[in-house]
Length: 172
Image 1 (tube, rainbow, N blue to C red):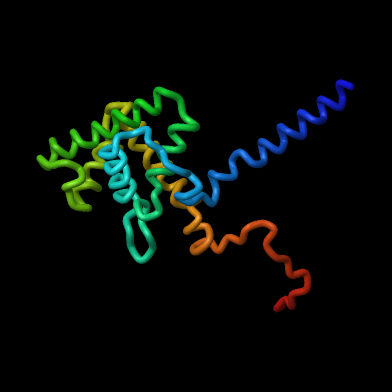
Image 2: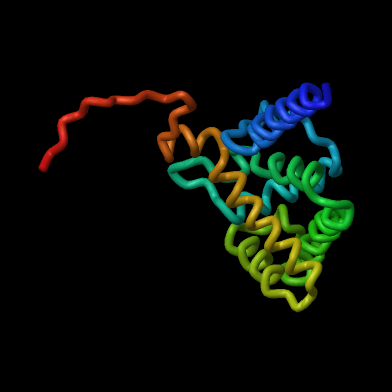
């Protein structure tokens, strides 16, 4: 009797473990849904920061792929309250650094000035500011590389089950 319930619970747990992280790889903005933890102005600022980290070239930038929504979802769902608060403080610090350095907001700065402000944050002696900048950079890279666009169009990822060619001529 207990063995049956144990096997049932293990099956449910295994199914949950397999499906839970599925949204973190091959995500799209539609799969993340709406996240409203930050005010719109802070959300736009975070979008400009991720665009500074991965700008648009011949491929879409991080802002175009809505990596800032990925970051907000990750911070909201996977990190504690202290990190969530550090994200808010880090965004305010970014604005302060832009105002002190260039006497204008981060949004008004050009790409070169934004890069300089972000490098200033990464090289900061304040540990909270440095953690914010490094976390934002790491999550931007992670979100960009795991986005559906990059996975399908750049990495040529095939969704499971994919295809299998068992008989292929091999050149010697």
